[in-house]
Length: 363
Image 1 (cartoon, rainbow, N blue to C red):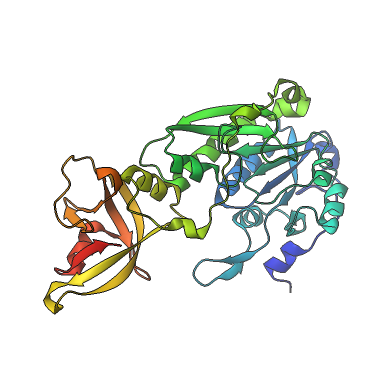
Image 2 (image 1 turned 90 degrees about the vertical axis):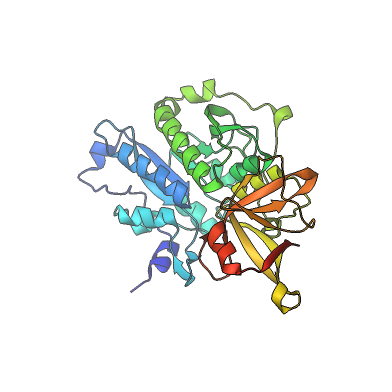
């Protein structure tokens, strides 16, 4: 018997839509054939809405196929599992031979099978693969993408993370046609969202894709009747900003920067790759012996008091349930939650009590 990953890697060139049969083909003949492309958990929530909308009695479309990233090692055991989108589709009973998992969307075997499906519209939401021209030419009504920024701001792989890192107070989500140039297609609709200064990337990502899904469902009729193309607005290239992929080495915190910069980085990199800092733990009773410890910084806020506790420049203090790290420009960062390697996340008070009188210094 094939494993789930083997099944999902097997391409099938059937053009029969999911859930259809010879007896039902006439009933669904007028429905548009939609292919969904997505991979992570936020994409699975978009798929939920599409499944719900497609099952409505007056639905204009049916989901003909799903394209997602190949199975990969996840969780602590690194067990090879389908992507969250693939698993959600399987949970719905969607045929496994209509769930495509190409390594690249330009693979000839995949393109051949994709073309045989005769898709009319593709919808992408955090798919994670570049779509080549030969793919984009296949759906007759084009491809639309839910992008979590106000295009042309933050084009690229990490729009939510880079927006939080920059400390912006307003972002949003755009529904745009996909073109070969990255995130540069005409915008069908967008919605602005104000950002709270404590919200973290995973929560903001979920919020924006939720809003983007509502935009998609409301705009599908105009996309299907062709009016969306005439009303979609070209992007102003002069306002373009980029949101490049995050590299793991960016996760380190440097306390010579201002506290607000570090706080925004903690929010932006929450989930993955996280933010890290090295500290020195000194034991006064052993003559000042010290050891270096790596901390994962989970939750922070900017220290608002004008009075920073006095001491040596690299001392870390504990005040009212927070660790206080002096930072650049006379500012300070409050660390509320943190994690030692291999340990559970703890609050600052529990961590401080665990030091048992040892001193903490930033490095």
